[in-house]
Image (tube, rainbow, N blue to C red):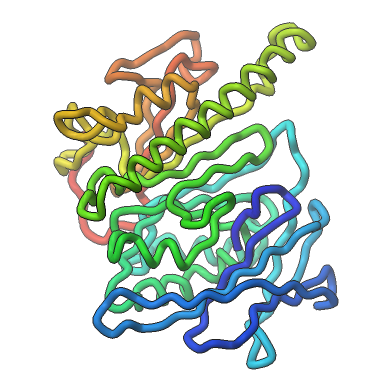
Length: 359
């Protein structure tokens, strides 16, 4: 399940290995008295076996805020178990709680049991309105890793909106498994997208275009253009809203909307593993080698991004407000209206091996 773009809408996505000739969700507040139909698409893996999967997508709309629904998915050929979710409340002023984690895969997924347990008890389904995942999962072996992970994460993703951000382990066949397995709002490919929820504007994008250039430059250029347009529109909107607040709220910025970006590989990190984020000229921060094209740090800073969330490093790290490798502190409290973005690396959901020491 994923957020549909507004609090009254969710996407339900599932996979079958045979064509069921229909994509149906039956749902309701007590019984399965309502139904919605959607689309089915055939996805063929790029490996030698050319294994087939049928991807089903159904959009549920006009959900009542704060109402708990039960549902199952399938067709006349068979139905899934019954799941539940609670529709989001309308909170234009904010107040949503987001759980964010990175680098959880199906190998040595130590955090998964706890996440599953909490979701089944309702802690995540009721108290955590949106789950955003900085993705790390190996789509190999004809996609069987992805199938295994889907089954593992179902006790979470079937109960709360589960948002994903592409990472380096989804690279196979130009990220085709990631594109086909998930349904993110306002996007036909899932690789970059944005949405508003409460007082926050979320932007998810691919850092992997900067490294897997063997697939060409077009998708990086397309993402760059999209990021500029998305941030410009948001900047114009925020400027208008802020001018209203200045007039009617005596410059009270308590309700100032946030801009939050999410990408896999970080601009900054303190590890000793010689990843790109340890280098002075990180590609994500400073742009491509020699040309410095598509540099993200200046772009995000110019448009007032507040929080930048990353993963990839198997560690947790929160930084002071920083821009151009310089720490900024404009107030007595460094995290209150900082003059530069705050970076958070949250890649500690799993540790496949003993990682290097952090500085």
